[in-house]
Amino acid sequence: MVTLAPEQVPEGFIEWLVSEGAIVCIGHSAASYDQARQAVMSGARGFTHLFNAMTPLVSREPGVVGAALQTDLPTWCGLIADGHHVHPASMRVAIAAKGSEHMLLVTDAIQSVGSDEKEMPFLGKRVLRSEGKVTTEDGTLAGSDLDMATAVRNAISLIGRTPAEALQMASLRPAEFLGLEHQFGRIKPGYRASLVALNEDFVVKATWIDGQKVWGSVMA
Image 1 (cartoon, one colour):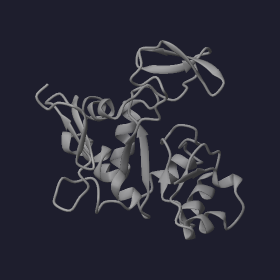
Image 2 (cartoon, one colour):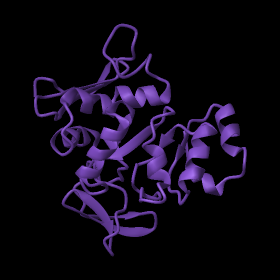
Image 3 (cartoon, rainbow, N blue to C red):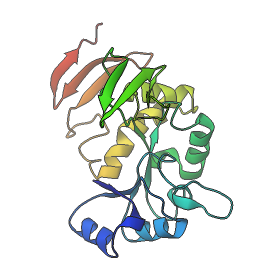
């Protein structure tokens, strides 16, 4: 999978990547709506962390966000559902336009997840961790402090999705986007047994990779 800014690559580059088996996403882009749409027509099928690091949807220039929310061609959008990168109302509007079946929960997490450290180096800068987010010293977001289970809980509590929708946005929908829906995203015979056990509060209690337990206890 490759994330690129379509306005920065030569003509025919996206088609070539797709022909070589790459999944092309649009992100970190200052492209116009027309440039983003052309990239989708050329084979791009995803938008990396929707709303962040891309041209916004405004009245006379729909931008990359406007192209992402179109439904005439099959594309998927990643959402950093931490409540800091994207306002919950914006996420609700995006899902209403696109449908939850084409939305993917992503974390954009840095090494702060699972750590108790309050500050750490990241890409040559000192970043600070506080109240569920990580920022540079001037307050700029520097990745996220989000884990996937929290993203699922936020999709329910902040965005108002059903538990089934939230869990699918973390499992089945990413599998469909990656073309792996015949191996992952469902619990059924013939699928890879890479599983997460959650309690009634959607807190992780145990994990398995290809049928082998690697952490936790479902009795905890």
